[in-house]
Length: 491
Ligand SMILES: [Zn+2]
Ligand SMILES: [Zn+2]
Image (cartoon, rainbow, N blue to C red; front, side, top):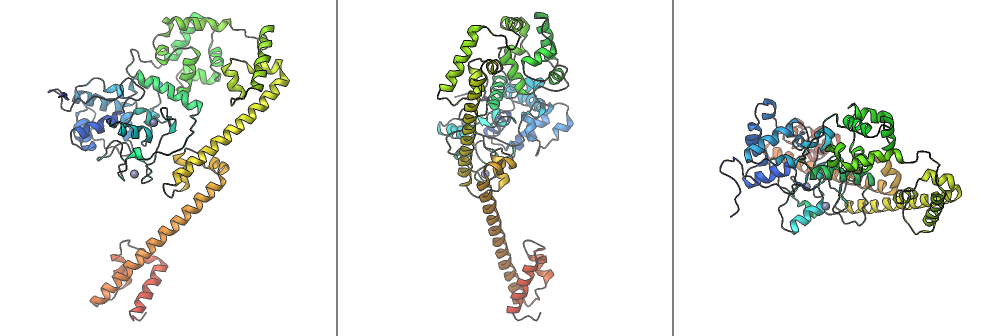
């Protein structure tokens, strides 16, 4: 038999899932599974066992999160205290690895999404493999909207009941909708192509590295960038803040603010920096001054020719050939993507081959246009599939597909109109149903009092109606008069 807990622990020492991978379980997923193992409600476990055992903090002990439950997964004091309490209750020391707490000095406090997100395909596969259902933390990160495994958008609305899901409620079960009970793995939207935007890919890559190394040897200090730059200057005196900013393609002011902690760098910055220095995030943050690769890289910065248009003859010939190849090729790459892959400098190319470059640019524009059209066509297919699950209003669609309303109206005018009309129709039908129900109820009440020999006055009826105050409505008042007249009341 598997030994689940040691005698000294108050709660089972349940093994967390996915430690040391980008798909490490979130602490809320862990708490939910732990509650299930103990046959307790999630909130009972949290409020009666975990929060009371936080030493000292009175405010946290009485904390009953409704709008702020996500804080448990974030990188602040709440998360820190909850993790410590849980670690002592389960006698585990690795629960901090289910958070990004060790990386808090480079992350914004708003790192976690306020509402739940999930990949329906991942949940479906877990179900099919009969593995324990769990939710990885990576789904809950505010900046991440795609599942890397399936290249699909994460869901943020239950398709069964069209509601957003909170992170913590008392009767929660992983993988199921809290409100309608649907298995979230059933909500797979079948559409083929989903291109993850490059910027998002980079963000996912950085977060994945942070999650894999959620228990690093060294944690970056707030002045990390300041010291890094000092270290770079010591190796190569040519480097300055301005130079550093130039190399990373950000403005001088932004770089200055980053270095002096006036502004927290975003994750894209860390992605650029690790790419620029050719170091993984953990290599980068762990005393890079002692890393040979780092030193060579820094020394190489000065070796590059700095004059923009200075190129030797052979390179010019090669450039022309590369450009011709691009024009001939049956490619779907834009000229800048091509240039990046072949390490070509477009400024130099346009200087030496203006005519060829002009043609390449035209070709590139056509490719980009076709890509954009395809993107919006695929998106439309996806939206239409989503709409098949039942009527939706526009704001739901904007939220589900993370699209701005102006953009939506511009690219999908027909769809915009259709959804609007359908929604109006739906609202009208709903209203009509409610009115019909009210009239039936009204008739029932009038008949009831009439039979008892009591006068069905407006006040009396209104007090008994399910929706009180409904009789203030003119049309319902008219209905009352009609029914009363049928019963021969003199009005
Ligand atoms: Zn997935
Ligand atoms: Zn639901």
